[in-house]
Length: 117
Image 1 (cartoon, rainbow, N blue to C red):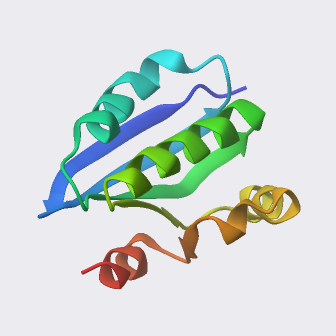
Image 2: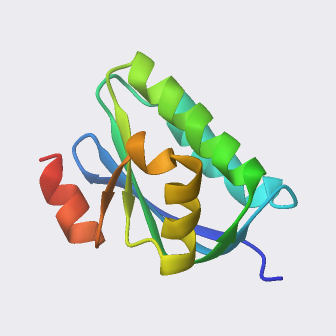
């Protein structure tokens, strides 16, 4: 299975960060998450984080738990997680689990960013 790689665009625009995720997001990938988790846990109020899932091939219950935890944290500070460009496989998982009702999901990063400008 592919390892997870995360590339951050901090302050893509004021109050908006983008995290490009590539590979498989499961419980074995704690190291690549450190910088993203730190960003989310220390960001100021009303911060929006766009997760670019275009190159995310897989996620499991660990990943879903992380997404929900990040969502809950950001909601407390009036921020939000926005999901962009999930693959059909990933989007199907979100739909089956009902996660798609929790997050705004957009077909690409540009549309996701425009939605929160």
